[in-house]
Length: 247
Length: 362
Ligand SMILES: Nc1ncnc2c1ncn2[C@@H]1O[C@H](COP(=O)(O)OP(=O)(O)O)[C@@H](O)[C@H]1O
Ligand SMILES: [Mg+2]
Image (cartoon, rainbow over all chains, first blue to last red):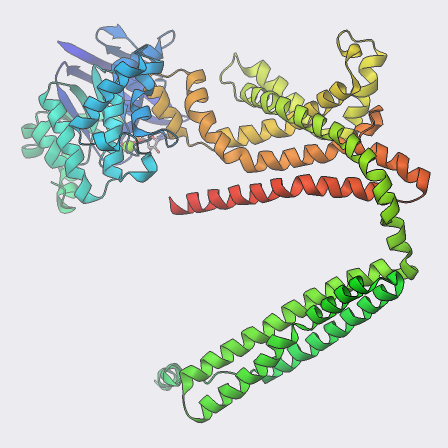
């Protein structure tokens, strides 16, 4: 069953058309990877899905309900659609635990005790339980990103959007974070992720989409895209990635 | 080819340290001249005061202190001599070390000597015109007689300052948030906020005080006409300073990176909740130093509330001063303001330094 439906989405910043008719379906429990050069519109697409950016035309549906356009309860939408950012964006004035429990308590209406219990369980899963009282300043990038993932998960989202979450990390920290995402995928969480980690995409993705200048130029299973790309642009892009040693 | 060889020669040839003697001579001269100036100033102070032996002893101690810059000046000569000896023996590194130390000593001597000169100038100024200046500003008996009165009146300044500061914290934030309201719906309120800030930042606070102090009574404005002058003063200063503080808040809020908004909104927090739990708490940390600066300004402006008929410390001191034809009472007010401001200024410095190391680290 299609869970997330993106239909002919157009988006522009001023005169600059960033998304030029993107269509995409994501089924429940599916993991879809967006690949493409920097500036191709991956982040913009993800931000449009949870309405951080308004779209000019087209339609986005989550669980059958239209979530683009006027009159949508964006705050409810965003509780169903979690997001993790490249630069972690933890709240620096709050402890790890407060970062994670903020939304469940303030938006989800849970009691603090209940929210903390769940937060600690999630933090334990990513090996961050002993840092629950620490402030983001005192954590490494990899630790911050793990907390950011937990923060997004704490509201029980139906789908998780991940925007190049390892791009700002030192290479030796990338593995830990990707391992967590891999585990989430095995648990059946629906995910849409922009990434430059092609090896990872090949492992976990059920569908890979190649974005080029605001369009999905080619999509298919990892095997189709990585072993037998049909489009010249895709081949060029993968060639460049290969040359930089990331495949 | 030749030029290459030349630069190589320049690089490998070790440079001997420069002589310190000329700097040392200048330092010694400056130190001696400044000590002389200090002695003259203290002598003229002695003649003016005709003080008891205890105070005279103090003057002598001060004169000796004025001689202290001579110590590093003399040391600079010693360093120069040792530099020469090391150099003659071909010990380049120790020679350089002595030269550097000598220059440091000479510069220290000059720095301290100039400070002595400035202090001597100030002392001399107080004794000028046969001590008329000192007698005008500082007479022991007037200081004693006016102190209690002025201190009493000063509590009104403190009351007005604290009252206005508390109100300003709230009103300033409300105006700042109004000015940042998003969308079409927020536009009229944004405009009102801008108009308010533009107006009250432009009007001198003494005029606002005057208009509020007399205008509201004159027009028989309900509620306001029954307020005490102290409350009117608090209102007037709140009007003026909320406009400054609103801008401080706004700058603080806008300095928070947009990614914090994105992160909070992506968790389902509403605009207001994001502002309250994520943005403002971070902004407040950054705005404390500029905020305290504005508060110090507000405190000083409480000296203006005399124009609306409130007898604050300054008004009280002027009254006393005109009775005794002497400005000592006014000096008392000035000193009181200094005394309450200095701790705050140091506190701001500390906060700024802390912020600096914090941002420097990250
Ligand atoms: N807030 C913005 N204002 C204007 N242009 C933007 C903004 N955000 C992104 N863009 C532009 O949109 C294009 C796509 O950006 P982005 O979605 O970040 O690409 P990607 O994530 O694939 O690197 C780029 O050309 C970028 O310059
Ligand atoms: Mg991006």
